[in-house]
Amino acid sequence: MSIELPEALILTKQMQEILIGKEIAFYHLQNFERMQKIGFLNKNIVDFDRLLNKKIIDVRARGNTIRLELENDMNLIIAPEYGGEIFYITDDKTGSKYHLKVSFTDASSLTVRIKSMGCILALDNHELVNTYMYKRDFLNGISPVEDEFSEERFSQKIAVLKRNLKAILVGKDAILVGISNSAFQDIIYRAKLFPKRKGSELDLKERKTLFESINSLIQERVQLGGKIKFSDLYGNEGKYVPKMGPNKKDTSCSECGTAIEKMSFGGGQIYFCPTCQER
Ligand SMILES: [Zn+2]
Image (cartoon, rainbow, N blue to C red; front, side, top):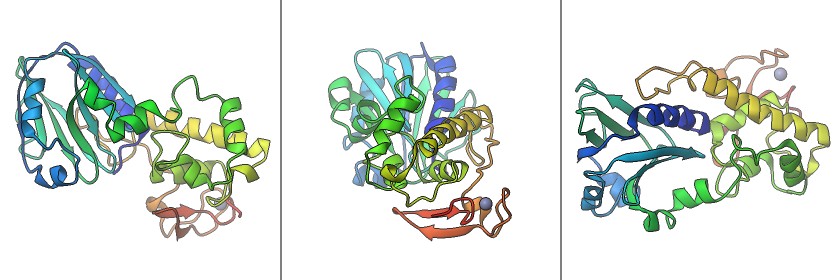
């Protein structure tokens, strides 16, 4: 499953608690050729040597990109966009299912496995600011968990946008960071909005409901340890069951009983209730 903003926040909080101050003693990369070919991992593997003998001084996430900041202006960027696993281990129980394993001087390790699209990059500060993921998630867009995400500002912004709601909330032109197709379906179902509605078509009340739906989705997903099938740093699985999405296939709406429908839209499948989310 995709790691979206709520899951990136959960992992980041756990990493802040356990990794800060730890010094990297060695690393191991494996089965990375495919990722390297499409630019998801450094072209030169020796770039990772720059992480050695450095301590982790901070861990932060924005959107679905996680930045581990190290001494001497070095960074490890982990962006498990369309699925990935990041585990903290103190023994060898995770076996060999990882692309990168970073081991610390106290013998604990962090393993990272990217399941589909996603990045693992060792970058200095200068390289970092020229990286697509960093530019997209850290330098652009509004983060729904930061103070800048206010109802007034969000409402004003979408009121003038003639794009559909999916293009406003998901993808490279989105005004927010960290929302993918999964969160999007859940958000607009909560807000009772049809996905093809345009920002400029929404009235004040609908914009307010959309704002509240984004907040409630993120809060619930963080509180429940992430979405189902997500594993946190210690392997605990998330308990948040999406209110709308592929898991609702062949079921009926829990609000009104109408059969859930599916359509292709904006480069993905969208499940929705044709009654609650009337066009
Ligand atoms: Zn319904």
